[in-house]
Length: 155
Image (cartoon, rainbow, N blue to C red; front, side, top):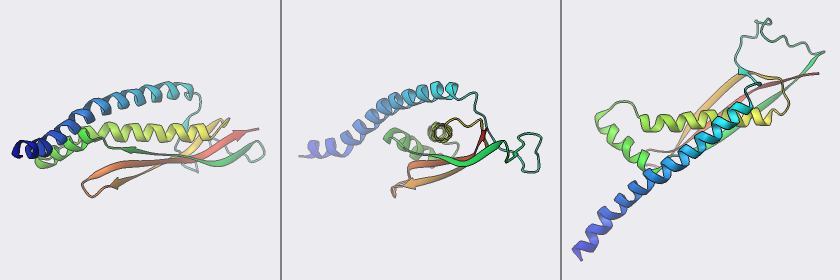
């Protein structure tokens, strides 16, 4: 009975860590590949931040352009392996590099979804990015990123 108890106490978490590593790595690589392909498709649609007083960058003449608020949002979960690594790093301190890729993926995906929503806009001005974490009581469970801006359509 003690062997069964030890297997449950140590075996299941170990299997989850190993499974989290391999499955998390696989899905993360696949998502990054998708992001890179979609970013190439939107190279001709800049999303920029500029000061409203700087009309030399993007003049907004109402007689030749329309504007619309666009946004993109994404929630990406933390896999068990990254949560385990972050827990170990929390003991000694330092950068949580296992979470940096998570935040990078979420930010890039949110900007891409915003660009997709903008349709045939020429550009997106005043790009803003908001982030928040969703926790499960045992640390970060997921990260949410919302990107929004003003889509400019030239007539």
